[in-house]
Image (cartoon, rainbow, N blue to C red; front, side):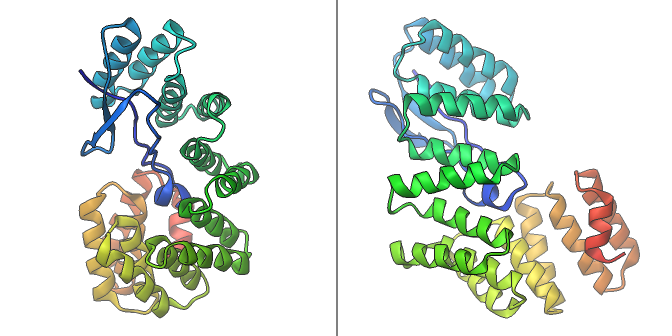
Length: 300
């Protein structure tokens, strides 16, 4: 029987998390990886004759229905059924991810850490915990995990991208550029290099160059986040039609992203369409952005 052995994490407001915080754990020895499903979960063929795997199989049902709490309880039952099972590092990681979906961040950190106690060299576990630390504003702990990944995997570009973004956010543009340049050395065609340098140029006000870099990535792998970044640059350059096109496409991908409505409110302000602007402000707020932040960003 096929069961889901991993839950993909695709939420979180921090730039680092959005870009590279997707879970992609290695399957423990003895579990045969199969194809990824459309929702980015990973299926594996395992024996479900034992209670342990029956509990994991039950968790799958609730994962598919997005009942994170019930799925978590079934995985906890599996863990307690066979506390010495070598697959428990993966089980604990899945439990942590489900807790993260539910906003139980302290519990999620605890279980990622327990999983790492079992498999201390698991690079993806370190990436997952680091992304969670960013979400919790435990930046130095995140940096420690990302740096550990770099020690374990000299070719890992995700950790270097995240370190670059964190360096940029604390104002160290030189360190950020060094991290992004290292990505290019590892993989000259890496989208993370172009995305990182695009973010750096955007922050420095070089919007035209940022657009060029974002466009190179969008052509290969478009995403709502990259389209939003490029739209923001277009707004700064007063290329309103280009900005409108990017915002429209991004909303087709993620229609519930409040930041896109903030961008569209900025666009409508520049077009002197105040009724539409106010409507987008209200939508952005209803989707979770603080009103003060929205109005300050737009300049109201």
